[in-house]
Amino acid sequence: MKDFWQENCKASMSQLGLQYSLGMLPQLSPGMQDKVLQQCKHVQETMQKHWREERKQQFHDWIENAVRGSGKEGHAFLRKTEALALRPFQSLMLEERPEARRSYWLSLWQEESLAKDLSSIEEKVKELAKQQAAQLKAISSTQLFKQVRMMGSKKPGFDQWVPHELRRLPKEAFSALAYFYNRVEQTGKWPAQAMLQTISMLPKSLSSERPIALTSYFYRLWIQCRLFLLKAWVQDQQQNGSCPWDHAVPGCSIFDVALRRQMEGEFHRQLGMHQVSLLLDMKHFYDSISRDKLLEAGLQVGFPPLLLWHCTLIHGGPRVIIGEGMAIVNL
Image (cartoon, rainbow, N blue to C red):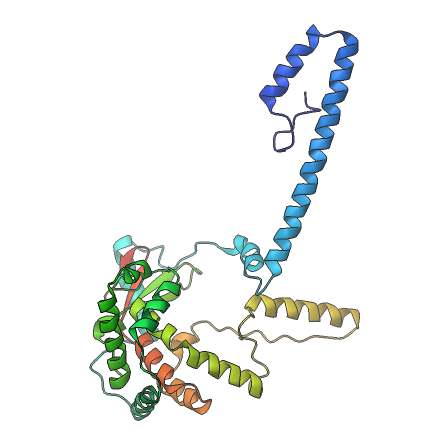
């Protein structure tokens, strides 16, 4: 029986079917029994051969898809063993963790207030943003209607609006929404509700969590309408070659950079050369960037002031931290 049945092989005969077939053998003549066993063995070998070829082709197709484009599928596969749900504050009582989490991130972010006065660089960028908006074609209800239908469904922001709800709005609502966006660009201000963002804390390590900002879909929709400004700036930067060291470009991922470094290392080893890699600890790098310095740097490299102002305005707004299903008073 073990010669024809394999538990984990799709091409093998079912155990029940094989038992039934072998149970019929004693009723056959010796010569017929040999012929049946030979035929079973031949069929089994043929099926296993086809199964191996099919599995080989499936594996070949998977490899092609894994390394195609940015290689996200391959990178996700390699990182499966690293995806450990490690979090800090696990030694504390459940009711003590929210305050401990708030104190930790408060030391990095500080509390945000919508009533604070703008710095000189913020006033400058705000005015430049309003000037650029006046030079652009106003956002129309038709443009919004098309953009909403192209938006993918991801985690919603604090207001819980999602794309499929926006798609169900009547056409009159898109006219009102277009008026709203144009007023936002004219004044350089957003309603307080739109600036509130959810910070979802994902597992990372025993020392800290990974914060993911979830903004309102109304803000994301506005970004889609003005995304052509960013694409034009990126293309201009690539053509000018102002940042030849920068590999954070469309179509390239950190997986591509890692593969390139590995390949260069193998080449250098074969050529008898040495390779030096500088690895920097970027922990909380983005959490410690000065907003004024970011605005100054953005203007220096010609980043569109309309996007520069509104993006920093939204992402610098009040935050509601959610970790382990518990919400924390906004920072």
